Length: 483
Image (cartoon, rainbow, N blue to C red; front, side, top):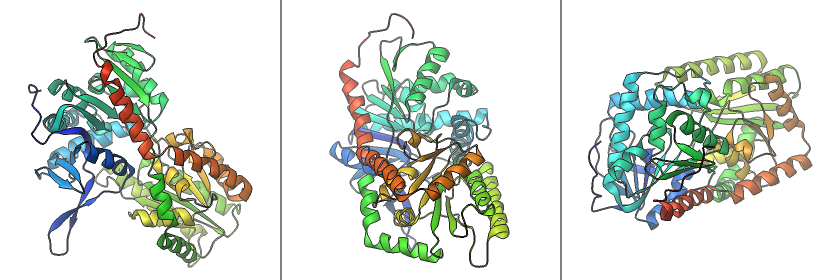
């Protein structure tokens, strides 16, 4: 690491450091390019507070090799960080998504451990840390996001010890037995300990982190605190992320979405029950098992002749072999199910491997009677919350994996073990047959939860906790014994 850098003249009081910038490049018909704001709750939650605090967002613009100057978009200051084609392959597709992603998701797929991928991960994290050090004002707050950048907090603290640094992990954090397989486990833990506050989706993940720091790094801990030798304290806490609830409710109530939802049901043949799955095409999402469970219910006559399943699988990481194989497997499964059980003009499963805008997603949520969200492991799963937000009439059923973080909050869902095909069939059938009164009771409770805990509440809670600790930044209090 180089010595401490001074902040730039256009210094920001709040800096968000994320793998991607909150914009997507758009190529116009005349060949010119422009930027469009990316959809997502994180951007909508942080944009107002960033504008109010002269904020800057540091991230990769999405293309290989291009070294862009900082620019402004929609009132936000954006600082691009360039990645080469080799770094995209080794840092992003390799270490981030073929090492950390499967490891952190309970080894649903086997992680790969390659030293050159780790070297790329270190190199890219250093670049992000240097950008944050350059653009943060004196005593600024820096919020680092997610698993791609776990080394940034410690690197940034070395460059800029004056900063207040937070880190948030959007995906699960594994138990010690799994995390300990990582050859660079200590380096990752020490990277995270550069933060003042480390946030997780669930309390259990924060506890996993504290336990690992005590076991693998040897620091003293007490409850949610880690005590470092230099006298600094690091807090690890749960901050369950959420959605822009009001935005989804407004969208779901709009005339075009209401009309589109009716059209979707008409195009499906006005079935009695529409089951819906919306996921990134990822092996952690449990799409294959879910479709098998539904097809068996159809084959056994449990759903009658009046139920269909709409599955949207958004393309994801298509240059990674495991994702290409998953796509082929699901393509074959859907073809086999529709070949065995469908009729001319009436497939059992309507499968779409494509991305849709928020308006179409909201229409699908409104059109569906039963939302099926069955990941093998998920940090939160915002699709479940989006469905609940769009059920303005308080109807509909949510079948939800107990291994999604959302299950901790949406306890009135029909909870399932996605590894148990028969159990999944039972719950899908219960949701299909449930009386309107029961569905209304469940949905009203879930809507209350999602309304009271939206993404703005999440962002405020994290930033408040991060800045509240500033006055205690130099405390040296330590527990008498390890706990």
